[in-house]
Length: 138
Image (cartoon, rainbow, N blue to C red; front, side, top):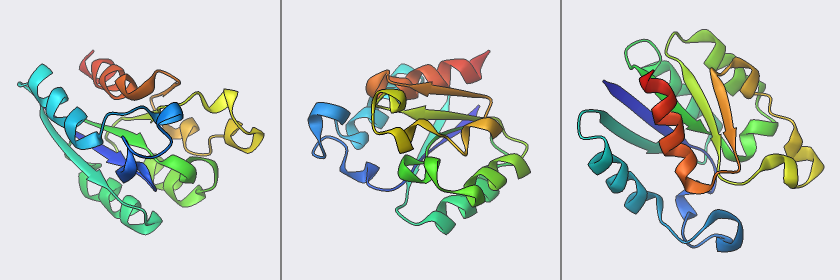
């Protein structure tokens, strides 16, 4: 089984960016932990601050991987293009948000991308990535 984790803008700063919201764990450390918990799954990680690069990665893996875990960051609320890319691919996508987007600023309450995903996890902290992987296993 192959799962691609894709993170959007500013998520390369996990562990140092606003730890009261996003926690103290770096994404690199967490990916290592996920690979240990799921040795039977090939987990790949990709992060970009650029919308088009995220779309390109979705197109690249969207017909051959078993699942995508996507945290599009701020693009969740603004990117029709990423939403369209999710709709265009065959691989199931699970959207993840570390913070509870409904407990934050009102503009974060709308997910343009979520309607094209298999499911959306929000507010479970960094463990939301593990929960997304678990959902793809069933």
